[in-house]
Length: 122
Image 1 (cartoon, rainbow, N blue to C red):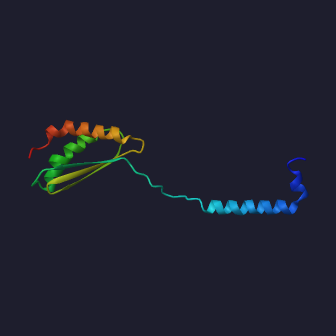
Image 2 (image 1 turned 90 degrees about the vertical axis):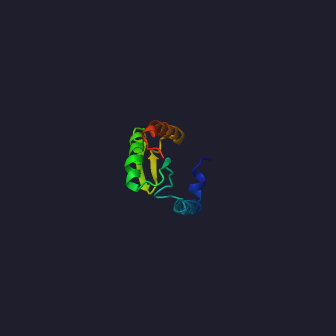
């Protein structure tokens, strides 16, 4: 007895088996969870600085610009945005997906340590 003999001798069973396989296959394919845009968390670090009483222009020129200049030397940065308001500035650094967030945070801390002497005192 070979493998194909029961299928040749029973064509109705073969047809029903193939129909059930096709139906279950179509049902399984239709219920697969597929997302067009998968949920991805980019490695992001936010740096905040404050200078009480300083207007947004002063914050941008005296605080945000030197920090951004030093942070831009870090490798693996995808984007960097900053927002300056009355008395504070916030710099958001988004790294590439392959960048380790722990190593990136150490690089950011080193960059801030290097630029802290150039920032205005309270």
